[in-house]
Image 1 (cartoon, rainbow, N blue to C red):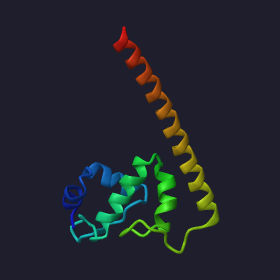
Image 2 (image 1 turned 90 degrees about the vertical axis):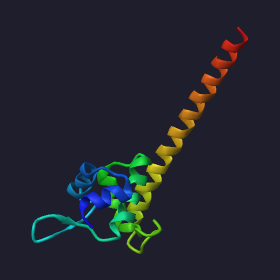
Image 3 (image 1 turned 120 degrees about the vertical axis):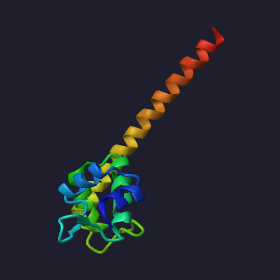
Image 4 (image 1 turned 30 degrees about the vertical axis):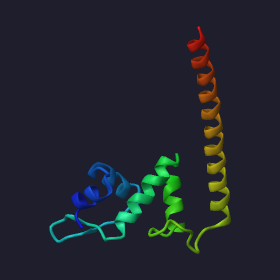
Length: 119
């Protein structure tokens, strides 16, 4: 499929898709006319990339992780390494800390809102 079709199906901009390709996250063949031609599996790959970016991972980390994930269900493949597991555990811990910080901020805001309502 062409880049416009992939963008439409994934709701990701063509610019982002080109960036993913530059970063080695996404691969496209080229037609004789030089147009990108993505396989059907690219839809799942782009969805997975978006999920990882949303989790706060950056491009180099995603590039390390993608070969260790199956695109169709996001499950692990047989090529995950102990070092990658350690790195991803650290990323998960970072996300847990961020969640805890956000929950504390929300609790503080709730207290301020409640105090302001009583005033």
